[in-house]
Each structure stands twice: as structure tokens, then as C-alpha cells.
Length: 360
Ligand SMILES: Cc1cc2nc3c(=O)[nH]c(=O)nc-3n(C[C@H](O)[C@H](O)[C@H](O)COP(=O)(O)O)c2cc1C
Image (cartoon, rainbow, N blue to C red; front, side):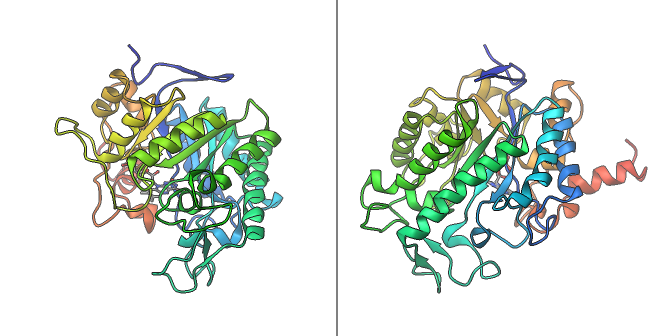
């Protein structure tokens, strides 16, 4: 029976355990040029030293006008490669599989990034939003492929395509957002055409050993759609599927009464029964016991824990060595990292411990 610290062989990699540090944008670290700063490198060094098997570097913009905010890391130009290679290097030095999430926000890009955010179709609730022309779609497609190649040049083992949380790829894939009647919409094949061309293009330029992971919004817009997309992505040759949510709170699948996790984790466990490629589950897994249960009962191949490893960069090592964990306090109304990671009670506590203000 596998457990949280069982190895996993993927292509020519042996991943040392089943714990993933998923993508987490570090708000306010980088400037508007999207270039990695020392603080980014320190953040990933601490998480890599902390012992997970996989680190997925945060959502990194393939196109300047497609950012989710003006502080986002970029991979839209060759100028980004040197900084990103510092992250790939520190992660790999610690024998952690190093992926990077590449991203375009589409209709969700805020006014501080663009006055006219584009997606498959205009969003009626968002003034200025518009449907992209086919020429613009091709430019974005090529930006994803060029971004993946830059990730490879920077030394990452692979990329994760951000196809979840209501961002561009999930907008195209979902009949809820995609109302186009041309070749990039209409039916399932049309809605998946952009993702298909991106994946085939990345495989062609980055080669077979390069890992392609896809973060899927399970309710796309229903779980049945999510399953259909998952099966299709597997047939395209992706290597990992990371099951999260689709950004909309409609059509949420019902979890069985005796299932002790939320619908996002549940969706991951259901999708696992439909594909053979490894599945990462995520969202409010929170504790080592819950994470272990998902692996031991073969409900997932990997478990991603974001906030627990934000509050405690050494979460994986602490679990492995049966040591105390610096707990995430699940701040309300939302995680303090959305404003400034220094406001996180976990980060503050670690800083106080280091300064000798608290007994260790
Ligand atoms: C501050 C913050 C930033 C995030 N940034 C990203 C991101 O860049 N890309 C992404 O796919 N998800 C992002 N997420 C979502 C996390 O990857 C994860 O799915 C979510 O926090 C739920 O997992 P958890 O309950 O273990 O924290 C972010 C979450 C937080 C709290």
C-alpha cells in the first residue's frame, strides 16, 4: 500500500513523495516587469528545503496583457529566463520535481492590466470585455508554447497549464463561458481546440521527456464535463492532471455523506477512476492524516497542500519526522497571502521564533 512518503516514478524522474506544493502567486513580490526577485527565490528555497516531492511555481503570465495582476511573474519574454532559472535551480537542488504553472487570465484580467480583457466571448457582467479574434487566439496559443519552451530553457522539468479557476483555458473549455460559433467554440472539439493546439505545440517543441501537467477545473461546468475533458486530455498525452475547481460556483457535484472532504477533492477522486495518468487532488486537505488517507486508499496519486506549506515551509519534513507543524489558521475572510505574506500568522510566528521572541 503506498503512503505519503512512497516514491512515484514518472518518465525519467523518481519523485520522492506524494506531497505537492501547488502554485501560489506571491502578491507584491515581483514588479510590473514580472522578473523574479530575491524574495521569490527565498520563498521557493524554503519550500524546497521543506521536503515536498513536487513544487509547482506560481501562475506565471505568458502574455503581459493576460496577467491576473501587475505583480505577477512573467514568462512572456526571454528576459524572464535568467530569474526563473534561479527558482528551477533551487527547487531541483533539493531533489524536488520542478514544474511551473503557465497562465493567461483571459476575461479575468483586471483594469490595472488591461481595459479590454479578452476571452472566448464577452462577459456581460464585465464592461470592456470582448471575444478574441482568431488571430488573437493564435498569438496567445503561440505565447503558451513559447512560454513552455522558456520554462524548459530555465531548467524546469515541465509545466502546468492553468486550465482551472475560470482563467482563459477554462473559459474556452467551458460551455458556460464559451459561446463562440466558430472553430474555437460550438461543440466539445471546438471548445478544446485552443488547449489541444497548445498541448500539441508544447510537446513538439519541448520533447517527450518534458512533463505536461494540466490544472483542470472539475466543474466545467458540470463534473461530467470535467470527466470528459480529463479523458480527452489523457488521450492527448498529458502526464499529470491536477484537479481543482472551474471558478464558478454553479453545478457543484454532491459529495457522498460519508466523504470527509470537500467537492473539489471529491471531484479529483472521481476523475481518478476515469483515467490512468497520475492525479493530484487539492483543497482543504489540511492535515497529514487526511493527506495520508487519500494516498493510502488510492483516492489520489498526489496531494497538494497550499496554505499548510505557506504557513509552514517545512510541512513535509515535519510530517515525515513526526515533528510539530506550524499550523495554517485558515484566516477569514481570506488568506492573508492575497495581501502580503508577512501578514500570515504562520509566517509571523516563524519570524518571531527566529528573532527569539517566542520559545521554540
Ligand atoms: C494566496 C494564494 C495564491 C494562489 N495562487 C494560485 C496560483 O497562482 N495558481 C493556482 O492555480 N492556484 C492558486 N491558488 C490556489 C492554491 O493553489 C490552492 O488550490 C488553494 O489554496 C487550495 O488549497 P489549500 O486548501 O491546500 O490551500 C492560490 C491560493 C492562495 C491562497
